[in-house]
Length: 536
Image 1 (tube, one colour):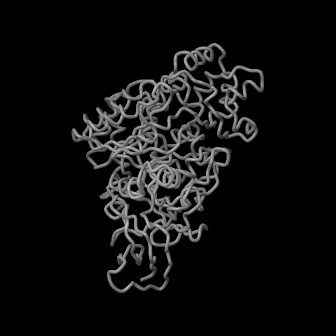
Image 2 (tube, rainbow, N blue to C red):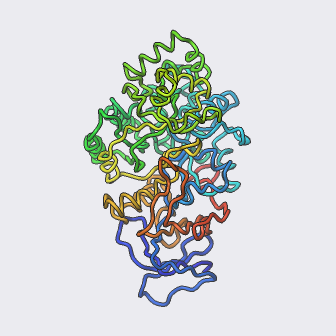
């Protein structure tokens, strides 16, 4: 054997009881699992003593925003240090493939707050297959991709608020099908982001039928996480029923004061759908605040036409008066139907370094310091930063967070934005925070349950036949951690602090993290839909 991990406490990703064993690795796969007492211990060219360490399948981040980070940052310790060995990217309906030149320009500006402006990336691809080929040159972790509905809509329809014409809808069908044929595992949609928010449910049903025909799944950022949250979840369940498409609910939180204590209502809705045969899963992160772009809080009509049109409206005083009323009085659809409370909106990152003085302050605090109205501060930020500002929204509820993570269809997803001066700590801490805070300290989940939520269950959603479990013949994407010590180091004040208690991470049988240090190994590749043209 190339490697033997000796004396591990195997937590295998099934949710079943842990056991002690030696695990041997060869040719990038788990070659042998020898349980304690089952005969001679396997030998290998290298033996690593693992007494006191749990061995689990590498964690799967079901909702990641590493689309450019994987290319620009080969180290990628933000995820590797957490034990993540596979990320699902192309989220929330906006990403960088498929694109044409015009659409790429608009998308880059629209999601600068998620990924940076991409000025340090050579965009030498246009199709999904070409993007996945680019990943295959070598990345830190493996990556699966979702065709982004909003980007597809921008290509076929533009950034306007109108239904797609028949020919445009047919072009969207073709683009989605081509992306799946080239290896995407499903389709994402961003229904509070332009232009995805302009799509009626009937459009989603038509595109989800295409996704279903390829065995993929739909991952929506649905139309409201606030005043209309339960209705929005129910809408997505009905899209799944009508299309026959599997459904994975992104960052399935129940936020804002209007939803305090309402997680049981959501879970009852999901249980009824599961019992009725809907193929449904969800992901969540173990924190209270959310994170998005400041521009996302604008009403949809103010963002129609794309980033340039939104900036033009923000320069017009008369239009700005309407925008302010929609945001602060009516509750804009961009803010989930809830009037904006500027005390809860904290600036976490800016694209323009000259604006860094705003970072770490709520909009309300920045306004008080300057003797201005909060809306005027927000408007000036949006204009000066060309919509690139990211924010935290402090609107979560601990009871809802705990209830969601216990659900039988739950998986883990960081929703981690890696750019900005002060990003949400979930980008650097989600997985150890589950293990340290919610397993060891609070006992919300058992260790075996939690590992299954973070590995075996998401691998099953992705229909990966040889990942997500510690099992002979499976790929050796593995994490070794100390259950008594594992914890997130990242905090809101110090969001890029690495976790503790995770000494080793293997990708493809090779140490990507060894003794807590990044090795530089780039064993990650694209993980493509089984049967796609480019191979699995």
